[in-house]
Amino acid sequence: MKSFAEKLKGCSPYAYLIPCFAIFAMFLFYPFVKTIYLSMFLTDKLGRAKIFVGAQNYIDLLTSESFYNSIIVTLIFVVIVVFGSMLLGLIAAVLCSKTFPGIRAFSTSYALPMAIASSGAAMIFKVILNPTIGLFNKVTGLDINWISDPRYALICVAVLTAWLNSGINFLYFSAGLGNIDESIYERASVDGASGIQKFFRLTLPGLSPIMFYTLVVNIIQAFQSFGQVKILTQGGPGESTNLIVYSIYRDAFFNYKFGSAAAQSVILFLIIMALTLVMFKVEKKGVKY
Amino acid sequence: MDTTATLKNPTGATLRRADYTQEELAALHRRMGLAALRRRRIRTGVLIVLNVIMALFILFPLLYAVSVSLMPGEELFTMEMNLLPKHPDFGNYIRAWTQVPLLRFVLNSFIVAGCITLGQIITCSLAAFAFSFLNFKGKNLLFMLVMATMMVPGEATIISNYLTVSSLGILDTYLVLILPSLTSAMGIFLFRQFYMTFPMSLYESAKLDGCGNLRFIVSILLPLTKSAIGAMSVYTFINAWNMYMWPLLVTGSQEMRTVQIGISMLDNTDAQSVTLMMAGVVSVIIPSMVIFIAGQKQLIKGMFSGAVKG
Image (tube, rainbow over all chains, first blue to last red; front, side, top):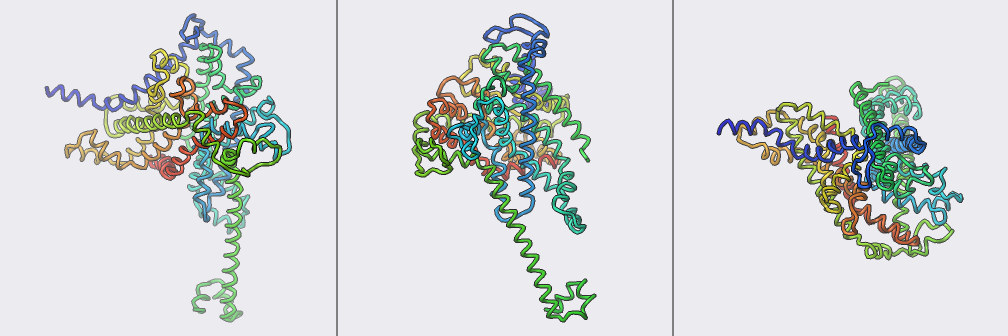
């Protein structure tokens, strides 16, 4: 009896892990393995693996123009989004770095895009960018069908995403600015440094520890964009906004090519994993410029 | 009074006391003080103006959505500038809430996001407790495994997950919306960071007093980590409320739709109903916005203090 109680005590630590590992096992580890498995098969319409094709799905992808397009479009998108959202976050954080009356309200508004869903935001932008009634054309006097023009559609989705992601960057940069020692600014002022000099020589280097982390988090987040594409452009016009996650969705649920979609999922995972590993590695070393 | 003023000003006072009378010195002192004050006021003014411009820029899409949602339908369809509604009314909101079952969607989202938040707090605090206070074989390996899940984007496993739940026959239920999000590596990591700041002796003395593990978690750890729980709740709830891809795939019927999928229905009903759509969008943004504003302080505190303390 006693030994049984001891045994129970001995394994009880694992009991606390059961709830979370059960979920992980069912919705993360198992589907992860299954995705790799599926990526080596041709499937039927219900997603059952039918014919083993080995690496053929990957070979097909890597030789298909559509996939290259999707990768290139995603890369352009990520660059615009990351640059835009970090710039917005940085400007807002610098504006809120010194206290002034009403700072609370302003910092709340800068962080607010964090709370907004990609789908809702996409619908708002759909109205603003509407060619006839949209405010953007009215203000600028242009007559451009932003969303249906392959030249502009990607930029529109990217700007929207940059806006959505800027909120969290504001928080990161605010925290980063808070960690910079105030006294170095005073010393620089005494030495006659101008505001711009102080920004480039003190503020930006002072932010470098959090800058890299923010950069990687932003890249990962941008890679995963979906809702805004689905609502604003549906991957079109043509394939000009066919970002990788949207391409996975389309291949699986419209073309029923689950195998190919699984292979794209694996490639997406490899990209995200590489980025995360880089982040951990650099974080351990600590960035100093 | 004057003498103390001059004495406090060491450079001017000691070096050139003979050049100035005390009255002159005091006047100079006052003038410089006023100039500095004015300069500071101007700087604050400029800062506020810049902030107002930036805030208007950031908030513009939201403010415009609110403005359009208050316009009667025909007011939007003009070629002239119409930033603000001329005859604002709430007609769009009433129609949006009656034309589609928006109340049902909101209720669904509250149930789903609430259960996910509660579930994550439970599973993550249990796991974090084991990882920070208990010793067992494979602890580090298991923790690494949890951390490694952060590298797997949800979008990469979503197809297999869809196939799993459809073969289980639980499509179009609350269960399928809630179940996959019931735990998160981030939550476990955040809680563990907080728990690690408590000394082991806290746990040991509680145990000596006959406090069981579960009671230790409920009556000691949870009250002590309110800020972490607050941060996590706000973050999780908003993310669950804003979920889009998973509900899109796994819900089919009108009754099970969450708000984000539900309002995209307003997008399709007919092309003329832009104002209606904006009323719907504003309606579903408000809950997540209110929760964010209410919990913002907690969120920031939890996000950054946990990371720094660890």
